[in-house]
Image (cartoon, rainbow, N blue to C red):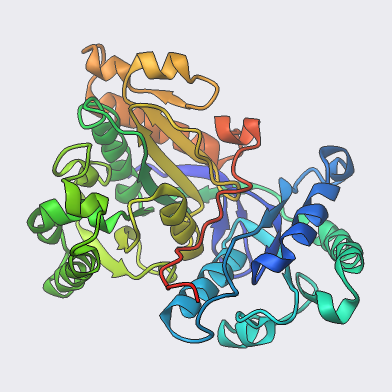
Length: 392
């Protein structure tokens, strides 16, 4: 098989990023303003001396307090933050706490085995002396990390190092006829070359549970997927949810189309590290911001999303490649969408040809070509850990 490569950032552990960001994280919402101010300080002008650094991003969210201090909700939040800190697209990070959050910053570091060092800093506002001092300290910490981050340069790497999260939003009747199967054909090419794709949106698979389980590479994987689907059925029982009301809007089985025809090789719970190559599944709601956040925490370095009505979604830490199911919506939202699959509907090109074009665009964006959402600066508010627990 011919070697296929993209230009990526190779990290010390051998994983490969498609972007080279520094991140400013919070363990709870109280640090959000400081995180934003620190990230906003690093304008394009200030980063001009560091051409290999793609940006400084804030990762803020609305939980971390008003919730159980232990248990799965807290574990889920912690592994989402830690997984994103460890994502190959993040070269270094500052993590901020007010100091009295239920998500205690030192317990978080200890539980997730994060060790402060030159490229990972911990700031506690109540110890530093408030917001202004924290902003000053955070800016200094990022400035100290910039030269090291800038030393990492793109180099040709095998496509087996690419990890793609699969999503959909604003689907229509055409999505199952064009964008979804075209993305599926591209994912088959990715998997054939040793890459990894992460399928999610468990609730959308419930109507086609038998088809989904039949895609499992072995009985153990099938049983794990069935267990997650059954959990969702119990979780949604008696509630006014999308899963309870009807099958997913893009048609039964259409969610599987995005994943092509490869066997499902592993099942992961939300935000757990993906270690298996090929097509895998990560449990998540059918809510793009939450689902993509979990995929990125699991190691995705790109997101590919299909849409029929159009969407402005973008995930800031990774390139988000958006496929329009029809040419009308692509023309209407050309500033937001990357690929027009309408030529498939018009009978001008085949699904296979469109899949090849999508695959080539994926490699180009993985190599640094900005997506539409990146050009617009979309994604700074799309870090949304799954708020699975009841707030208290």
